[in-house]
Every structure is written in C-alpha cells, then in structure tokens.
Amino acid sequence: MFSLNPHSSGRHFLQIPGPTNVPDRVLRAIDQPTIDHRGPVFGALGLEVLAGIRQVFQTQGPVVIYPSSGTGAWEAALVNTLSPGDRVLMAETGHFASLWRKLAGRLGLEVDFLEGDWRHPADPVAIGARLAADAQHRIKAVCVVHNETSTGVTSDVAAVRAAIDRAAHPALLMVDTISSLGSIDYRHDEWGVDVTVAGSQKGLMLPPGLSFNAVSAKALAAADTARLPRSYWDWREMLGPNERGYFPYTPSTNLLYGLHEALAMLREEGLAQVYARHRRHGQATRLAVQAWGLELLSLDPAAHSPALTAVLMPPGHSADALRKAVLERYDMSLGQGLGKLADRVFRIGHLGHFNDLTLCGALAGVEMGLAAAGVPHRAGGMQAAMEFLKS
Ligand SMILES: *Cc1c(COP(=O)(O)O)cnc(C)c1O
Image (cartoon, rainbow, N blue to C red; front, side, top):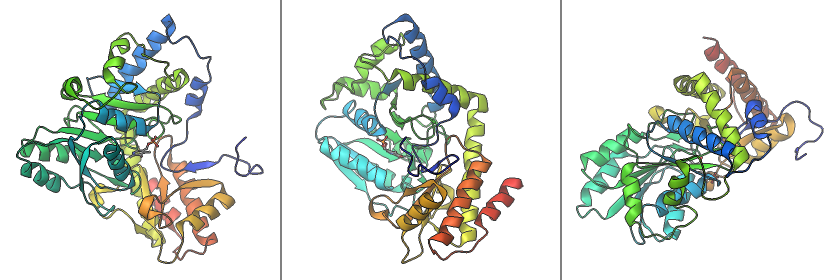
C-alpha cells in the first residue's frame, strides 16, 4: 500500500530505533472488532493490561495509559505534578532530552539544563552538586532520559536516585523510558522513580499510539497541589475508572488488544531474557562497527545502549546518502541523525521483535550499503558479529 518500492519482494527491514517491527501475533490481536469500551467485556481487558504493564515497569503502583504518542506522556508527567514557574533540573543527553526541555519551557516551567556533549550519559555527580547547592529546594523535579534514542547512550537511573538521596533533596525524579521499557532493565519502584514516561512503539513491540505514566505515591500527592492547567492528561480522572478496567474517554481499544498480546510475549520470554537478548545484540552490533573501522557515537563503554547503536560517519561523508543507498538497494530503513547530529550519524535499531538473523540481515545491509555509498570502511563487520553470535 505505502510501499516505498512497490516492486521489492520480501519483507522491508525496519531497523530504526522506533517504531519497531510489530510481531505478527500482535498484528493479529489488533485485527479484532472494536468493542463497546463501556461494556462488560472491555473491563476485563482493561484490568488485564493495567495489571500486566505494571510488571514491565516493575512497580506495584498505578500506571496510566494514554491514547497518545510518547510526547503526550512527557507533558502528562509535568502538568500533573508541577506549578507555573517551578524549577526543574534536566540533563542534556541528546535530542530527546532537548525536546523534553523545550516542552517544559513552553508549559511555563523554569529549566535548569545540565549541558552535555551528546556522547555521555547523564552525570549523577553534576546532578547531585546542583541539588546540594539548592538549599531552598526550589528545584521541584529532576528529569532524565533513560535511553537517549538520538545517541545510543543509556543513563544510570539508580545512580541519579542515589545522588538525589545523598543531597537529601525532595525533588521528584522523572524518567523517560520511551525507548527502553521492554528492552533495557528498568525498575520504577526499586530505583525510587516518581514518574516514568513510556511509549508503545519501541521496546513494547506495538504500533505508535499508546503512552504511559507510572506514578509513585509521592507523585500522586504532588498532583493534589500542582497548579499547571490539565484536563485530558489528569491522572485523577483516569485512576477512578481504571480501578474497574475502564477509561474516562474512549481508549485505543485495538492497541490495547495488541498490548495484551505483547505483554504475553514478554512474559513468555521472561524479562531477564529479553534484557539479556538486547545486551547481546548491542554487543554484536558494536563489534561490527569496530570491524568496519567506524566510530561509535557513545564514548562511555558502561553506557552503550542495548537498544540501538549510533554510528559516526567518517569526515566528509553523508549519513543520509548512506541511508538512501541502503533503503533503495536493500529496502532497509536506518535511523537518521537528529538535531545537531543530522547527516553525521546513522542509527541501527536492535530492539523489540528481533533475533540473531534479524541482526545479521541488518548488519549485512549496512555493510553492503557502505560499499554502495562509497564510504571508506573495512569489510568483515557482519562476520565479526556472526563470530560473536556463534560463540
Ligand atoms: C521516541 C522517543 C520520544 C518521542 O516519542 P513520540 O512517541 O515520538 O512522541 C521521546 N523520548 C525518547 C527517548 C524517544 O525514544
């Protein structure tokens, strides 16, 4: 229908770091009649997905599900807990952290932006220092992107929590897990996160269109006094009907069928195995990049993302020209460079519904594309990944 190349046969390789490939099982689950969202059958579905999604956030608390993209859940996290003029501390990890910051500014919040070079994770020491200097507790929230999808760098949320605790600061901790939930180990309760923001179309293997807020008791209490205007995003409107599996307005019924199936798949594989699979594919991808003689954008080995890899182009070479060659010749989509990284990096998504041979196909496509686009490199990247996957 919307095929880029109507004459191509076989499956398109969607190897951007979200939206990711949707499993056939999930597509079939979505392909059911839409039902009465106020009727008796819907309540049972609602209760099951609201309970099931908590396991993925690793929380006992409530999770709110919105019919929106992840950006909506960013906004929901802020408007439910904060008041006009409140100060928030955000860490500049990359393009997505910068977009969240812009959104906060538009809402009338004062943002303290901890500068970063887009090649390292959020710095818990710098966050702790800012909080320690804030003796009057003017900072009301610390916001961090767990997996910065524009750079392939993962931040250490437990370390950020520890920094807040060391400073004995009462700020709320808010974390964007839009590209990590369901692909990278994440523990809302254990790490003391107050609001976790997520989306459907990345690690959760669903189409775009659902977003989430996992909410701590402290965040719920903040919602009682927060004064930013909110209506559509109001948690309190949601939580009442959610108790019986219902929603205050029309939910994305068919995406909830899909969520039900995706949760079953994650349960069957086991979250620990899901996370280990992503770590292994991340490592195999980095071995390929190294063998090609190309440079990873991520500079801190402890922070390399298990979900995607961003690769720097050699000077004078265009990432977009490479991506165009790969798309036209091999029918594969790679992630583009975002913001200041435009045309300088390409991103390989290795998250979601993905296995060893998907990775081999993706890496073969990149390697052949590098040759087609005349990008200087050594052959053997895919071979290096295969040797690792075999061992
Ligand atoms: C994709 C993404 C977003 C934006 O989500 P949308 O669904 O496009 O609104 C925000 N943050 C991160 C980390 C992402 O990966």
